[in-house]
Length: 101
Image 1 (cartoon, rainbow, N blue to C red):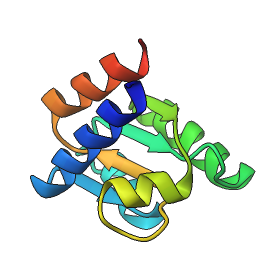
Image 2: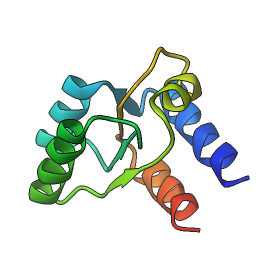
Image 3: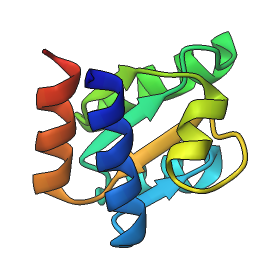
């Protein structure tokens, strides 16, 4: 159940234009302060995980590892995605609540 709820919230964020995906866009949103939450695929490379963990720590953005690249991409209607940035505070809070259940 948890996975379906998180994925549907990510899809909702995408449809509402409150989500960025891909390493470059996600990194830009962290740096410019628009990202409220970053999700990294569990099967992303070690370099990708380290990059986002370090950047999110520096910019004080919550970061979680969740799902696979394929599942994250499917949830937002795209190809595989290793990183997503949620840019809406309310949606980010809802996703975090689901992730911490």
